[in-house]
Length: 120
Image 1: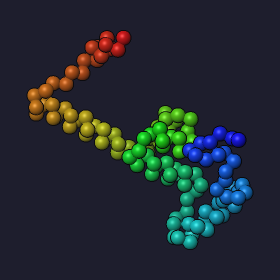
Image 2: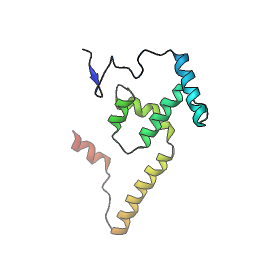
Image 3: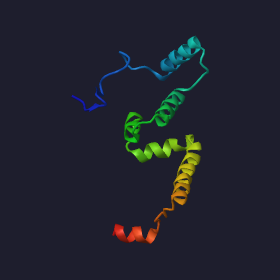
């Protein structure tokens, strides 16, 4: 018996027989035309799936596994370019921490040499 991944065996198929790329492409084209969707490549389906997962609030390890990546860095290196607005979210978040500390009179202790010494 082959190893199970995500609860499925490698020998299980969605379709009863393996499909050629041209048959899969034709069926996808027919389905998109039937529901009025614009043309998208098979790779585009995968990329859309990945972007929906990344936008979802779930564990990155789960996302990486669903996409069949060998590790999380592969997923991050492949798809993070799709979300440049996240840089702004990150900067705004850090800025709010600094402003909140200034309002409350707390000082952030971010002396990098201190952290390096403690890490050793």
